[in-house]
Length: 329
Ligand SMILES: NC(=O)c1ccc[n+]([C@@H]2O[C@H](COP(=O)([O-])OP(=O)(O)OC[C@H]3O[C@@H](n4cnc5c(N)ncnc54)[C@H](OP(=O)(O)O)[C@@H]3O)[C@@H](O)[C@H]2O)c1
Image 1 (cartoon, rainbow, N blue to C red):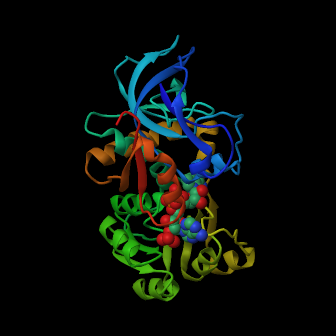
Image 2: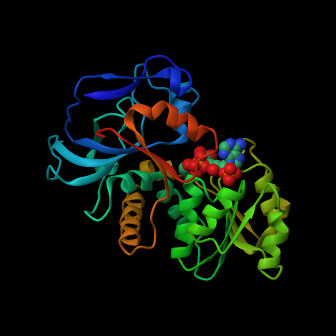
C-alpha cells in the first residue's frame, strides 16, 4: 500500500517520502481501517522535525486521526467489517497511508452514514478538546458569555460552534480581517481582530463591564495576560494551548482578588485516564452534528500527493479550520 514515511527528520517537504510499504495486519484487539480521509495537525509538522514530545523510531508514518471503513478485525474485536469508523492509529503506523491499524478499545469510534469521512476525520481532536474544555472544565451554562481566542483555528472554530450550540453568547478574536469574517460565519456575535483592536475594552463594553464568563485560550502569552483583565466574577479561563509561543504566568493574588479560576486542559489524558469521557463526548458530538448544530470547517481537501506542501501551509498560519487529505483520491 502507499504511505508517507519519515526516514530522516526535517521540515515536511524534505522529511516525508511517499512509497510502497508492507500491508498492516490487525493483531488481537485491533482494527484495520481503509483510510478514506486523514486530518492534518500542527503536531504532524513537529513529528517530522523531531520536535514533538513523542519521537518514534525511523521510519514512521505520521497522521493522528483518520476516518474510513473497518475492513478487518483482530481476535476479540466485536465490530462488523464494513462499519464506518473514525480512528486514531498509534505511531509508528500513523494515518497518512491507505490503511492503518488502531486498537478497537479507545481508538476506534463509529461514524454514522450521514457524516462524510472528511468531516469525521476533521472533527475528532479539535471538537473533543473544545467540548471537554467548555463543558467539563469550564462548566459552561446557557446564556453565559464565552470569549474564544484564535476562533478561526482548529480548536477555536470548534469552540465557537460548540459554545453557540450550548446557547452561550460568543465573542471571538482572530488575526486579520479574513479570519475575523470566518469567526462571524461560524457564529460569533462579535468578532475582533486582536492585532488591531483592544479586545479587553470590547469585551467589557459588550458585557456592561462584567467581562466574559468563560475564556477559551489556545494562544497564551499576551493573550492570556489580557484575558485576566476581562474575565467575569466567578469566570473560568481555560488554558488550551500556547500557539503564540510564550507560556504566561497566572498570578494567584489576581485570581483571588477577582474571584476567577484558571483551569488547565490536557485532552489527551482523558484517553488514558478517563476513556469513557472520550466515548461520551464522541456520542454528544455525533448528535450535535446530526442535529445540524456543528459542522467542521474544512479549509482544504488536499490531494494525497500534496501532503508535505499542505503541512507547510498549515504551519504558515495562513489557513483556517482544518485541512484533510484523501489517501484513496
Ligand atoms: N489542551 C489540549 O488538550 C489541546 C488539544 C488540541 C490542541 N491544543 C493546542 O491548541 C493550540 C491550537 O491548536 P489548533 O489545532 O487550533 O491549531 P491551528 O489550527 O494551527 O490554530 C492555531 C491558531 O493560533 C493562532 N496563533 C496565535 N499566535 C500564533 C503563532 N505565533 N503561530 C501560529 N498560530 C498562532 C492562529 O490564529 P490567528 O492567526 O487568528 O491568531 C492560529 O489559527 C495549539 O497550541 C495546540 O497545541 C491543545
